[in-house]
Structure formats: structure tokens, C-alpha cells
Amino acid sequence: AGESSDERSSSCDECEAGRAKGAGPGECEECTKGSYAEKGASECSNADPGYFVESDGASRQEQCPAGKHASGSGNTECAPCELGKLAARMGMTDCEAATQGHYVDSYGAESEAACEAGTY
Image (cartoon, rainbow, N blue to C red; front, side):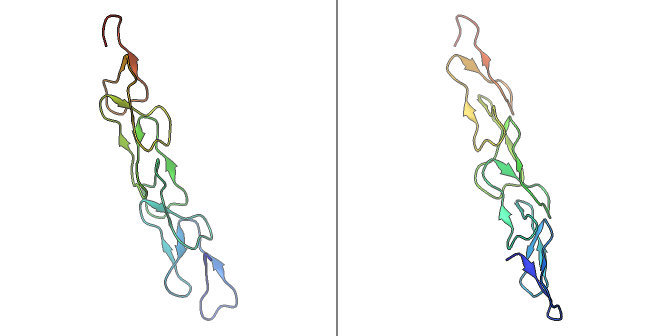
């Protein structure tokens, strides 16, 4: 698992981080955007929901920053929240609507603002 050997070798070597076991003997293939592999991985793993991998050969996934989200798996980037929604924490899979009595007037918001007295 996660090791490669070549036909003339007397031992197996682990694939380096960002690469996983290839189809042929002695091959380690680079993980593509949206996936990653730790050292010795037998296959590349897709980025989890709320995470992304923006480059080839990655050894780990990154959490989406606050104000952005990523649903599904294998994400190569995180999308900013739309107007009226926010992502207050890192690693959000979807943006949340502003709570009653609050509003969000910018894209990629991390917080909401309270409506002034007499407004909603």
C-alpha cells in the first residue's frame, strides 16, 4: 500500500508526499488539483467538503477560509459567500443566511451587522 518497487529492486519504496502508487511497477503518480496524498499513500484522496487543494502534487488539503465555502469533494478552490450570506468559521461547506434582525451587504462576508432600530 503506497509503495512502489521496480522489477530489479530487492525492496519497496514509499511514494513521496503529493504522489501515490501508479499503475506500473516502480511508479508513483502525482496527485492532481483537488486531491492530495501523504507520504506512503496508496492513492490520492479528494479534498473533503469545506476544504480545497489548489495545486498538483499536494501533500495536504487546506480549510476554506472564513467568508468562503466549498461543497462536495475534490474542490480546487473555495467560493466567496453571496450577498445576504456569511461563513463565520473556516472549513464551511455552505454559507449561512444572515439571522433575523441582521444583514450582510458584501460578498465573502465573515460576519453580519445588526439592523438599526426601527428597521429589519
